[in-house]
Amino acid sequence: MKQARGGRKGAARYCVSYGGASQTGWHGHAPLRDHVPRTTPNASLPSGHATARDHATPQRLTQYSARGFTLVELLLVMGIIVMLVGLLFPAVNAAVTAVRVAATQATINNLSAALEAFKQDWGIYPPSMSGKDGWSGQNTGGTSGYYALAYYLMGEDGRGWGALNLNGKGPFGGKATAAYPSYYKVGSANSGAPDPILDAFKPGKAIFYYRYEPAENPPYNIQWNKGSGLIGDSSSTNFIDKDGFEILVMPTDAAANARRYVRQDYLLISPGADRYWGYVKEQQASSGGSGSTLVQVNTLTDVTSGIAMCDDVCNFKH
Image (cartoon, rainbow, N blue to C red):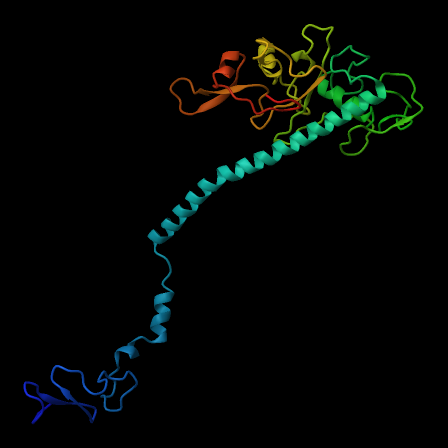
């Protein structure tokens, strides 16, 4: 580069040469044209000499993009997935429970309609107490109210009563010439009495049935539905006792300052999602253990204080 003569005072004119082409400008100012070297191959460069862009070959870009994830990146992604699952699981579980509650409530509503239709034809609701109106567990697995509910609403062989019954029988004995289709239908007819009607929860349990008996003391008796209602299950799982049962079906009437039965015709009760009949509360593990478990309660103060809760699905509000 050589300094040129002339030019403005205080400024030196210079000449820059790139590969045989010169550009002229004033010192301290940009040249007349962009003097940045072009990145296209230049014939004047020595053999084997490459520009900066030449180094970014497709092969090298492929090597960068195919290097994969580091262990830290994989752990971070896994942590995010676990966190999302933890956030979504309660919502999904609540949605499933809500669907099962709705399905069980629909079953109870259908059973209520069937009971009303039965009463319209025969004058009374089906019995739930052994020894009442000829009920003694005919051709069923027991004398519990949930067996009676299925037997009377479906017929002794699942086909109904009267002309539709294989023996032409009525629900309370004798012959019935008219045809009475099943008031409630589950599955197909069979040679024996229908199984108990189960709720929609898992595992499914029988929907307990109690008919109001004003001549009995008490008119609703916990003993009319024995066992858990699970087919093939002979356990004693039920309401904790008479008091635990009456807390649910005979709450306090604040206006009358007395306890009254919620209904005086019949009761239909599913144990709900927790699979316990009646009210329950959380109890801490004993002996210094961690966690808690649900236990049934039979004390009214636990309910009125808000300690106990009940998710039973019934034909009445609680």
